[in-house]
Length: 314
Image: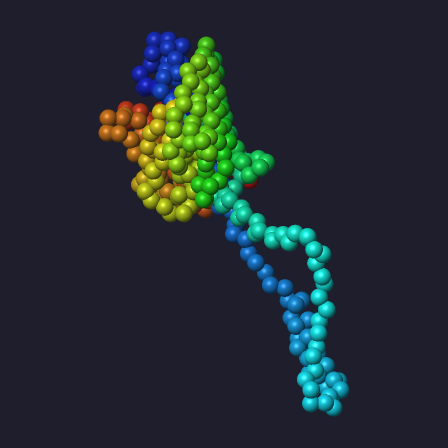
């Protein structure tokens, strides 16, 4: 995400202030944006079967009346011809089809304004879409400009759904700063139970613990848990090869005025270590399937950036 190490003090040079952007990155929660719970499938019963059943029931007495009474006391044997199966023919039993994975978050596209000191300095676009073979892609693209300098991030998570939770398969990040480009790739091999990654010219390989998320997929896991009302909200996240626990808590219910209208929201904060001077606050709208509609990032108690939703499509 776009880095946010700003201060209210004014550096002597705008380029020094712009350089602050290359310091500490926004929390991954800044990339949050998902959509709606899939509607459950409903079954219907055909009414056309009822008259057929009634006709069959009425036909039984009529058929019995037309039978010729037997003049013999010997029982009547009724035989039904059987279709013979040729010798050597294999009988194949069809196994039931495997159940489709439960998808918690539906496809969406959301657009945000990125503000600093009340001014729009950039934008973010977040998309979740289905791929082939039961795989999904969740991507966040962020762009910002400051003092004629441009900054951009693109984070892409390819995943599948497992027991109602996202399971990452590959994570890619491209981060551009003035004079610097950073490329990160992580591959999650669940059959082998291993993770392999690369950050520029550095490589790593480590065991893959069950339930591990990447920086993007953990946001979908949080979305799913909010919809299900699950607590506590804790996630094992591999951040560039370093495994950490991300924890969140609901701290309040608030109503926000947004470009989508007035929305009732849940305020969610990331729980950090006591010596961490950063704070990330997000507001999720239950009426939109717990889509986050605003995210704020603080550092040393000062608001560094404000992400506000302006458009949502499915």
